[in-house]
Image (cartoon, rainbow, N blue to C red):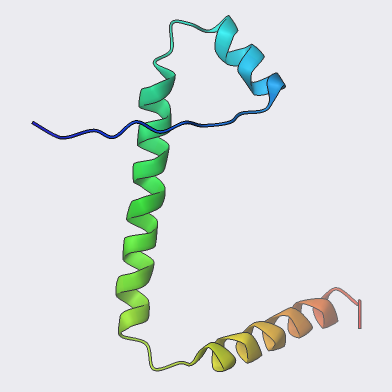
Length: 77
């Protein structure tokens, strides 16, 4: 049996209105699945990054160069 911990979640009023309108949906299951999917993405990212030799400074510099290239391609620079 999987042990579950309760969690309190704040949602905007507009979202809550939709959730109340669709009571047939198991919203806690929707949230659980979304959280699990995000956690899986983060685990994969951590696994990939653990093998990387790039420093944070290197990654920032690469990101800047990519942004600059995109800006040039679109005539923004």
